[in-house]
Image (cartoon, rainbow, N blue to C red; front, top):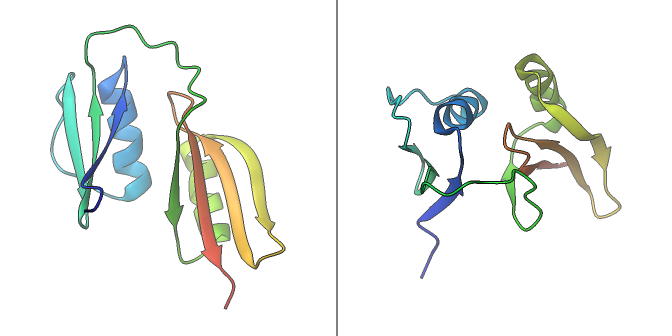
Length: 115
């Protein structure tokens, strides 16, 4: 068994989906205001409005991405205007991490491994 999809429920599908399309460098041509699927490799990231009101105080989910260079991604994130939680930091176990909020206040981590 493997995870085939991660879904983010949002009151503003277009804004959140556009953020992830810019962040992931994906243009899938979609602009639906209720449901957008962003495909990256084998796992789908879906942004969906299930017609319930969200409080955007998400505290029970985070997304983590492994990238080649956290510092390069940090500069891209600044250009996207994201709210940074923690600037690039090297952890004792050798990973270099950064954390930030997406437009719906989901916590996102990026990590790279020092070679």
